[in-house]
Image (cartoon, rainbow, N blue to C red; front, side, top):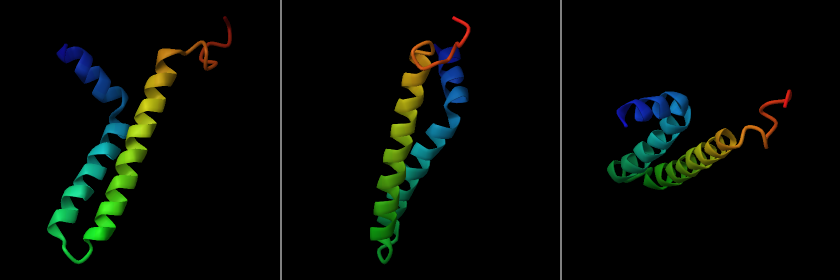
Length: 73
């Protein structure tokens, strides 16, 4: 189980980093009262973008033949 988690993190580290960055911006919105609206909007956009790219990458890795992953077959 731990090995699978390490491989998952290594394979999707860019997408996971974007998700953590979006969550960090949402947390920072609670600390900064003047620019809270900016951090909230940017945090939600980046968080949704990170989740969408992670889902797209997960789907493309599930069906490599359907997405043209192996041209020789």
